[in-house]
Length: 306
Image 1 (cartoon, rainbow, N blue to C red):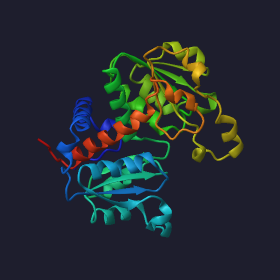
Image 2 (image 1 turned 135 degrees about the vertical axis):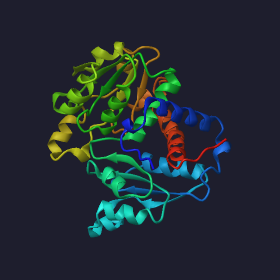
Image 3 (image 1 turned 90 degrees about the vertical axis):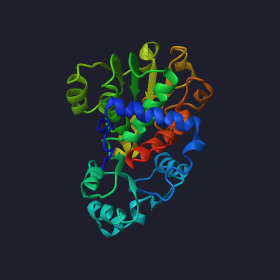
């Protein structure tokens, strides 16, 4: 039995195979419409979510399966003090696979250690968000044609942004990927990402504070919001949230084929006027997210579609 707790749980070859299946799903949805008939996914979301939870649910429904679960800790036995270990033991009796989001780092790992069904990490605190990374990789590969030889700018909250941490961990394995880390000093990537991932792998990276100056160099710009839920101080959040706002004027500095990605939700870090720019692909990302999660469910349940 295999789980997905980190993007590194799959080899580059497995990721490529997963994206190949996802691409086939996008082209031939009817071929997969009953692939998981009789199967159930439990979506255990201890934190609010729109895209990730509904994407998993849409993925299983598109495969002909069923969905059960909860959308907040308040509506589960966690409100009564039940542990993650006990919850997953119970859910394993009801479902065939589980997607879990939790505010505490490592909670999906705890679940996996006590589970008799595959567990998917749907986001654990500021740590990892592997299925968003799968979505990002598929978006880049589909629209750019490759995942190597790119310069990617990661902008905004790089300290608490679990999508950023997961994406760096994944892209580090592809040749000649250059990272430009764009953030205020207070929201720089954590030291462990800098030391144990970037430096340890000999990756090219640089840290800057200005977005406009670096735009002409980028093949991809990955925008992130400043995450209010990770701040303990309201004043600090208010001071940081408007650090970087991508607008039409800034887009004029970018390459004609640069792509703008965002894991969503956005607050104000991308002006709505950018939505009309063909280089803005964050809503396409959402659709790719359904396809890649469908492929992931098939893989973890060991369902083959001929």
